[in-house]
Image (cartoon, rainbow, N blue to C red; front, side, top):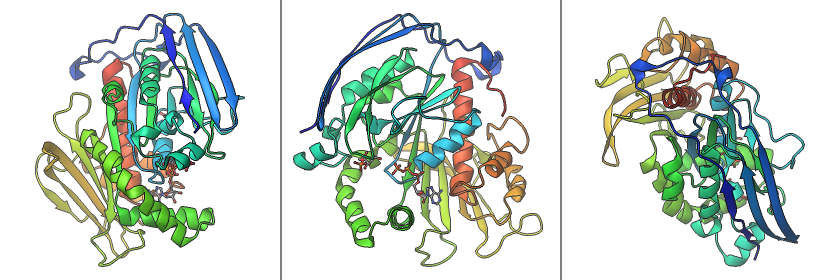
Length: 409
Ligand SMILES: Nc1ncnc2c1ncn2[C@@H]1O[C@H](COP(=O)(O)OP(=O)(O)OP(=O)(O)O)[C@@H](O)[C@H]1O
Ligand SMILES: O=C(CO)[C@H](O)[C@H](O)COP(=O)(O)O
């Protein structure tokens, strides 16, 4: 059975974490003033046989003067739009996210000037063959190395460099580790960012993409059948095989999330099963120190709004917005909902002007981001709109924790 065993010994001084900024007392510091780590040396002792990687990884690094690394967690099942979401979020911080230069072409890591996105699939402890032999899915906790995940996310948060394993989705094997340096914003995305309490504690802002079974199925068919040549039966079988572990280990993480984007079939067209028109809900925890929930018209009220008419062009079935307070697993939340889709993306500015607490830095920033990313899936509906708003919230969380100002892009 293939297994990855890695121990990470880290000798470095942890940078102190500043007290959380009070909103009123922000001091603007240019992004260019953010310090980078000064020195890093990695010793990796590896022995590799077919299907088996044993790795002892020692990261030695001098104390970093980095003020604070903000960790954002994104949880979702596979094929639920994490990559698309990440492109929207990282775009808000500027720069083009790229895999590590000159490294493994199958690396799952994407870095830009301010952000690094690591995929938690890299902490699979069993490779594809190992899971097959053990009779477990990739969603099961026994397929993950949570000890290493915790050590490395903690080290990255402390400004250190780590030798992170790579799960190769092409070969299904665990590849030799890649050096990962500490960014300003670390995004951990995957199946289990909030499952292990130690890892969960390190996360500053938790996001969950909750895609209903009907829509997940429609997206899987679209991608795996149309683009990857899989049969309908094999897609159905793969979804069914994953379902018990998804329900047991992935889905419950949404209770721990600060914001949830829930994607459901539309209620505007009876029996619409193709997943083309979506009802999308942004569920936001109330009373959080690091962000304020978005609201429509009047905070705390319950509002239903059909924006279609003279100011917003809508073809059938139109758009219906909803906003109101609710409870979610016993916690107070605010919910913003959009059912339907836009005809003309540039007219989104009309809807944007009725939303408050969006964390936009200027009038029309949401519309500008949506137009910039108009080729991404979901750009004409609530998935793109709410992913963009959550991206702006990521920036707000970063600015509140670090007391730095991110330049507008
Ligand atoms: N908002 C959306 N609207 C419509 N389709 C979408 C949307 N987001 C994703 N999809 C569909 O789902 C597929 C998977 O999206 P994406 O690659 O972003 O997901 P993922 O969670 O990163 O997947 P994986 O973990 O399997 O790599 C896309 O190819 C697209 O067909
Ligand atoms: O759920 C998943 C996370 O994206 C993958 O299925 C898991 O990582 C296993 O990958 P593969 O199917 O390439 O062996």
